[in-house]
Image (cartoon, rainbow over all chains, first blue to last red):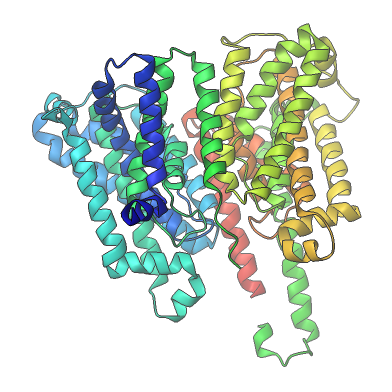
Length: 315
Length: 325
């Protein structure tokens, strides 16, 4: 009983409960058909939200005003870079992945450079960067669908014992993120800065280096996500990252991370990602039109945020 | 500089520099607009004419109105990431119901302003992050727009076409409209006592609450005004384009934020400038396409131009502020 209570006190449990309820609703509608398939499909799609979500979580944890709005543009550009470098050739997969990583890292570093040099709020810095990255992507990708090498595409869709390999890797990534956040000097620094920037600075936390690493990390994860998305959907295009602006922020907040910063929640990112994907699956099984699906998705996100309540005012 | 001086006795020259820096900072938005205009005049002198301005600034009015809408939200230390899809929703309502059943259309538009005010109340009462709430709402508006108008089409009401097609003598309509919008909002927000309370609710909410003003009401008024100007933006947009599309306003979300910041607005502290916001919107509207066309830069780089202008202006602001410090 005590254990159940302790579990219920965890802020991330609600996202899993939500995901479970949505799944039950979908399965009830189909009278029990395809419940397992739904979970497998949800796992494959949730992976992409989890990867950017973890990056966004580190950024948001830095404190109020910290958010990376350039992730969708970043994903778009990295997917194009990866596909162009790989050029449909299986032997170039590793180099293409490295290129996507480097591209994402460079974008993250550029973001922090803008924040630091211009002393502007990160929202505006990443917004201006997003404008520019988007143009580079349009000009570089020329709106063409560039196909991934067959081996890489197969890997992105590979399953062991019915479970998507990418999902397993994303679970490992989440565990690693949890360890980094709670057990390393860097992770503790991120939390400290989010809780109280001034106190952290006075306590000798290297604020600038930590912030730089955080934006670079978010950018890099965006880059990986872009390459994997292009492989999974068998092609890169400019709009491939668009839905991840809302998704990356939503999974962080629904997952129980505080928007005010200083309190991060790694398992919640997985729960919230599954919740969002299963929500979409549920609405699809109900057979509603695009318009109604969008309206319901929006209302449910607002509803969940309202129910979960905002951060308590700490002054 | 101020730190070096003995407290309570700022030197005259120090005060003078501070005053000049502040003036320079306030003039920065106008200066950026002048530079963009100068560049256009240099590249294509014929564009600087009644007809040229009417054409180049065609879409500037809806952008300016959307920017003002965003400015009200930012004045309350919040951010609206749904204004673009909201403008699209209003556009779809305008091109369908407002044309076919004016009463129903008007009721829906008024209702949507009420929804904005209620969102403000929700954000205040539950202490919610406005970014997430408005991101969620952006889906709702987009979905509603698609439900109303699944395929691009519809028709603007005739009276709206008459308003946006108005051709005043000597000065092109977009410029007149920009002046009128800037003057009205400036008077309301900067010159009235409740306007000061509204700005104060972003600058120092605790003080405003202690002075006996309801923060719930200020937030509802700010969001309601944001809804009102969002509606005006969507209606003028349809007046200009004559028909609608569910995605017509999507780009406005980021443009509007950029416009507010370009115009000298700050994210925190209720520091905004209505005149600056309108100037910022005009600068973006001019720099995004006419300037690039005259410079023969492919349209691919249109979006980048917005980002680059934002960065350049902010860099200039840092340089000026550094002198202040």
